[in-house]
Length: 440
Ligand SMILES: [Zn+2]
Ligand SMILES: [Zn+2]
Ligand SMILES: [Zn+2]
Image 1: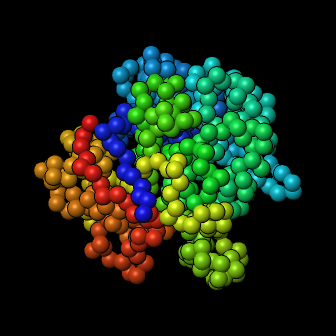
Image 2 (image 1 turned 180 degrees about the horizontal axis):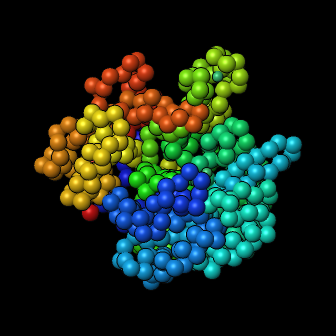
Image 3 (image 1 turned 180 degrees about the vertical axis):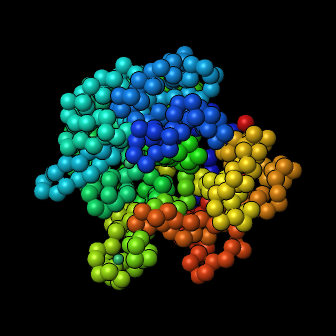
């Protein structure tokens, strides 16, 4: 039996989160500024952060004022030149008709220089409103965006965002396509990577051979600094912009793998209706012909369902292109559960701050520091929770129709019948026994 591998932490040179939003995006925290991102990225253990929203004129101005180019080709805060690295990123929403169907596609763009970001912003200004939202909306087809970026940047990446979510993505049930070529046509060759999104993990993407040639990347899509790094990318190449983009184009050059949510925690993992309290597996939805048993309207088809519709391999298959990954539960969530608190209270925040300042970054604590070492510094219950997470022994209540799922690491939680243990079949392939983890 083939197995999939854990991230080899001893080889990781840096971790990058390349899709977030600034305070200029809707429903985003006012704290999403370069200074706060610099600070939070350190707590999380993220070395390279996407700026998000470079298409927004006021934000780009703010970036120009607060950042400077570092010798490694990334940007850094002027007042903290050794701190977090920044890379210019933006997300664009294209809503367009194609052969009689309306498509809504989100795409992440990465460029190397502020001058290139400004050039793209200028071109987009002529095609729509770049100031209304940090994630602007345009009526032209997504493939035109690839052309604009190609013509404006020498070292760019165009990455279809959260490719499976129903409403705004490349393969989404409501407004997507059934193949990448249908959407991007002659521009497809300039796309090297796909963002799997919070509601799917690499094994779910391994069952469709059409995706084998793409690097599967993961990002947080965070709207607040607390959420950055909840999904991210691990590299083994030197911390340099050119090295990072080359590794995303060709993982052999230093893209090691990804940090992932348990996909059930994502907002669109299963099918259902949030307001009707209906959450269904793809097979259950098929039995009901896609109709909600409460309101009689069509159900919102989630990510798992779409994956199963497009898959051409059985679940559990592992292609040669498969890369290592880790499923994580955010430390604040494990803490909250360990402290038996209903909400993310001040007490949880204080304890989180204490841990990441005294012991190591969040990713160090969750992934790298040996359990024996954690036992010296943390409560027995918290360490037990971290160990369960590392072993993948969690209980899940899948997300659906825009409602986040819940992952519980403590088996002793009151379940009121809604939680069920994550089974081996959900985990797909058998995981290799985790090696002795060590700090690098
Ligand atoms: Zn999006
Ligand atoms: Zn986004
Ligand atoms: Zn309903």
